[in-house]
Image (tube, rainbow, N blue to C red; front, top):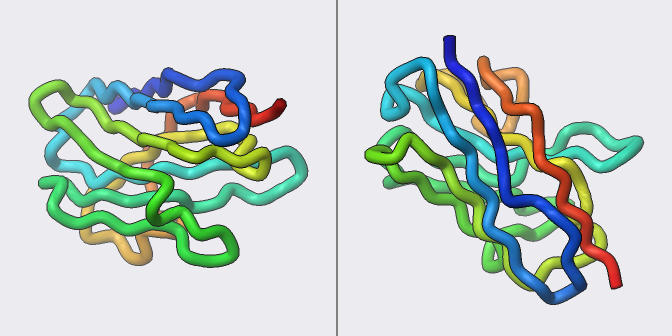
Length: 128
């Protein structure tokens, strides 16, 4: 069974950076496209970033929040690990960050319902 486990979250100040990781196990990692989502208290789960199986296609949230330029999604298929680099963090980035996996093609990659497996999440708090 596929399992995902996020790590790397924590408390940082505005303007700081974090690197999140997602360890994949229980399947063939390179058969799955991957996504990062986040969820703040009282809000719906929000798409952050997507990467295809080979790591050659990426996409980021454009509206209402502009992620491109501050967040970078990547993967290492030899280490079965997904990454999210987060730079110039803002208080509004505070959320639980989740990684997710799906077998492509499977529709809109920004739709959380298109993903079959989810990690438990890691808390990112941006505060002075």
